[in-house]
Image (tube, rainbow, N blue to C red; front, side):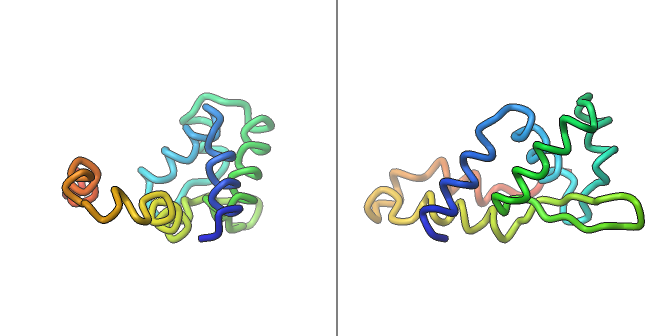
Length: 112
């Protein structure tokens, strides 16, 4: 990932409503949710959420697909993986024992 792309992604996530929407879609997984369902679950106005989702999509952290009149959004997990790799590249100068908490988090099995 290029630095400019990482900055765009981090800037898009640096707002409470957008971060909430992103975290919800990461929890839901690859199938994503329709925009109105995201709005309902987060308790936000659809018109306000629409702008936030557009910013996240432009930054590459969300994808969208149209299903008739609905737009489904999902976390772009490949982009998220690239962002995490960018952030952790050369972590601790190769001294991974200093990054044990991060590694443990990444190795943690998915919770049901």
